[in-house]
Length: 144
Ligand SMILES: O=c1ccn([C@H]2C[C@H](O)[C@@H](COP(=O)(O)OP(=O)(O)OP(=O)(O)O)O2)c(=O)[nH]1
Image (cartoon, rainbow, N blue to C red; front, side):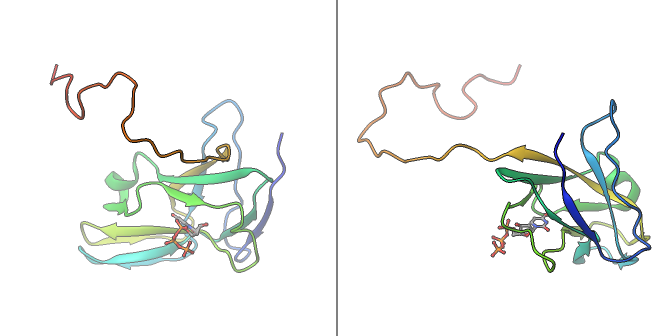
């Protein structure tokens, strides 16, 4: 079990819930009423800021139903919340692009997140030519 310090924007925001035994992804809600026209972009306030456990980051993705419900896509596809994004002004946002006119109400569940351990430290060792057997590049296994 990990404990996460969390700050909410106001009392109106429904509190986050970890639902044991279902999906371990946690739904995030819009903290504002958002009206977007087709083709508009907005960083939608998610109403939370968190101090993630040491050595963890968070990944934010849309819910599967988000496009059907709201006609928006998350422009960064997967948002990464770094461990250092942990202070009182470090609010979480969903960067959203509307493909149709849409209205998102306060507390609508628009995306989801989970925490994940940081990768190990990495050193890049440059070589002239890799010696491992190659796969023939992208698309080499065909269509079916
Ligand atoms: O969907 C997202 C993605 C990121 N963030 C926050 C957490 C993250 O730690 C910070 C910066 O994200 P990132 O490093 O991906 O963005 P950047 O464009 O490189 O901004 P910065 O200059 O702040 O690093 O923004 C969100 O709230 N939502």
